[in-house]
Length: 274
Ligand SMILES: [Zn+2]
Image (cartoon, rainbow, N blue to C red; front, top):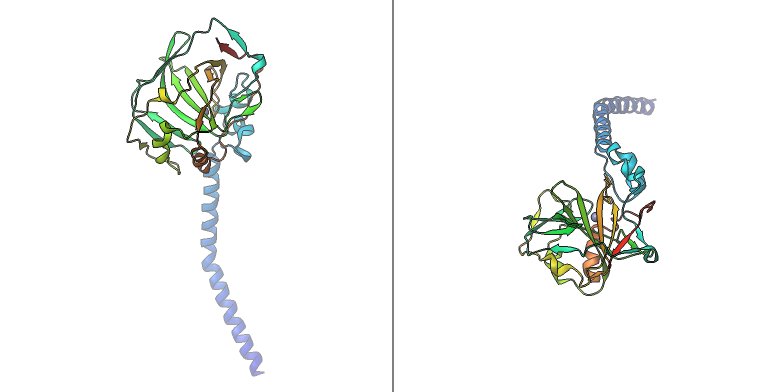
């Protein structure tokens, strides 16, 4: 009998304790749940695009009405450039590139590494229209394809004219010799998303980055990231430049894959200057 009594006393004490414990922890649990819900809804509100899964390229158009062109656009980039279908056009003027040594700062915007010039001294002239360099950034693997083949990386030099129309100069990058002109930037490449740019100690002369042969493919396309806005003049240089395996790997450690797949050409033609 005594043992039973003791057992019941302990049982009641345990019950009271656990109930108290429950009631005292309940509000906390509820609070935590609310916080989690808030976090969840915040995540949905700030839901951003990415290169994989539910926020990947196939879904960009659904993420935000402003990104509709990503799904509905008929002149999207990048594209596969099929050499046999490229039209040689003698009327296309040689590309006029005016780059000079310039100070840059680097940012990691969560999608790529971007270099922002400190002056507007760099420009290109396309179809008699001057476009000033706004920024340059990188993708891996390349976004454009030549005959269905991707390169290891692609460099995009984004230019704007006086009316904010865009012209992007695309450079294919293949694994090869170390690129000395990007080494200084690569040494301080921001591995985490930045809130403040990392200023480069030395200037970069982008002229040095360009291949010898400036022959280019031309077509009308879009931004390759949301909002995928069209009316972008694309100039894709035919000759690739090189970066070392180490340099490419360093970028891929931060962004293993930040390329949009090729889009349908639809009615468009890719032309070539000659
Ligand atoms: Zn790009």
